[in-house]
Length: 626
Image (cartoon, rainbow, N blue to C red; front, side):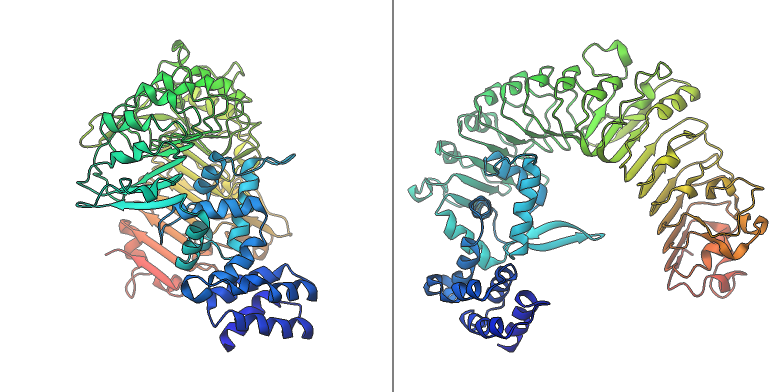
């Protein structure tokens, strides 16, 4: 009981000690019967209750008399649940569609709520924003709990088993999660499941699809899941019958090796969310463009798909087209220009025929899609032959909500279905054309992540890279012709820098730091890469020197700081590099040093025998291959 009281006070009485509230609080904790989840739920509820009367009403509530499974644990959950606005209560009960211990993706769940019409549009607010608020409210009340974190970003949530039971209770049979194994009876032969409106289905390997599901005409959500890459293929008959479920708002059946989507998919006129990820489809039927209510189309990992429907402009409500890893896609249809409300377009693919392809949207056509947000990849920039006419200058600048941009000057083409072997192709344009294209693609001001790959220009844009004051991560890969690194040290917010295969760079010099050779520093403090935390050089095959002689030329060496926040330094396959800058190795922030496949560096910094081992021995984590 003492532990529960301590937990309760941390949540409900945090920074507001009160004798009156403490007295009532102890009575409330008693009603939680020593159960931590109950205590946590009530504590979260009372965080937003400020007065004695509000706390007394919680204590006196008749819901404490509610007796159900788990010794009345539903009582505190009920109290917290009925304190929520009706829109959030509806969203929570939908979570019963997930099986226990399921890793819930926040973004996907919000999309599913939207598909069911649960989120009410408010003035000056997007549905996605309202969904975020609903989700965060449920997480604050402990109905959803953090599960997966990566670099401080939460990527998954789960429900406690008791909370899941509570959600099932509230759904009153409308939500159901079923796993079908070999020997199991058809789940919908039993009439007790006829009330189901939202179904998550897992059909394990070797089991036929339970066709009785197609008889539940009132089904509004059908989400199929699988852990097996070799999941049984859905036959044409199954898909044809699924097209009879005309009440569906959400349909998801990834990893089913589907080769053709039936034309009758147009019958699903209420469909708002469609996930066809990891299928073997070569193209989508034009009839799909009659799904006017569709707001989310997911075709992630459909490696074989070569083109999208020409009539895609009819999907006037489409907000998200997630087409990452569709490596065989030849182009984006020209009609995409009509979808000015599009918020997500994972990859924009430029046709290898350039402006001669009348069916394809040109790079210039991207200027119509200024509502794009989050991440965008542009693939095939090596086929853009005319950039000097100024037509593509405003393609990206006005996309203020883009935070991640990937510029690929090559294209990927799948050449073998069985081996999944890929080849890269690029255009035949000159180095000058590459430079003109990259110069014209001035990114939006809020960009945080930039990737450039297979760029064949001799230099980087002189005007815009150093203007990206919000940039946190920069990746440069396979940049074959550049002999010098750009003055990246001037980027004030850069935290991570990755440079791969810049084989013409022979020396990392003062240009890289952001100060030209021979320029003296002032007596005031000068910082180069002021926030950089992680730096990686890979496959810099010709690089021999890494110089930071600015300090030697400066008037006041003590006020010059090189990467003062650098915590991780990784050097891989830089065979000719002779030494690392002492100023970096002696940095107090450096916690990890990795040196792999670098023969000279290995001998120079080898423990015990290396001439400069003493310069790195203080670093907490050192990895040098033998």
